[in-house]
Image (cartoon, rainbow, N blue to C red; front, side, top):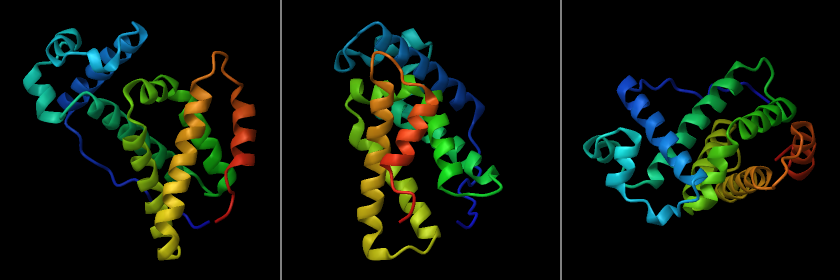
Amino acid sequence: MAKVFLNSQMKIDRRKQRSQAKLFEALIQKYQDNVKFDQIEVKEFCEMANVSRATFYRHHQDLTDIIEVQFLIVIADFEQQIDALEQVDFTNASSVIITEIYANLELLRLVKWSATHEKIQALFSGVVRQILILRDYDKPRQQFISEFLGNAILNFAEQIASPPKLIPQTEALNLYRRLLPAQL
């Protein structure tokens, strides 16, 4: 597989990063406190996160945007790791994917809690589509394949994050390599 630079360095304001981190931590706390997602009030949530409502609304339309932005950060990290690989192939890429899944289990658990599966799946599908475009893959099938793989990867990640007892990372890697196509 040809090496393609996926990550185009974005300049992100440090204050925005700090606000996002505070909001994300507050959201995790709400999840851990078993608060229903749809019962979170923005005013109280912003006070808990120590972020002004004006700052919240400057960067987010609603609470689901916090999760979406966090996934964009994870995707950017994934792209940097892929770009750093000497050889990009299914074996190496699948290792990076599994490592990212295990590094972001709490974030993945928020997807079901917040009912954001479709939004996040669209992000995953977009990354797959970007790769297919960069590899000059057959255009008529790009949408189907990107939707299928984006959904398959997200479903796999959610399954890994959801059981009461987490399966070992090596076992998850073996399952991933068996369940997802190595070649398109």
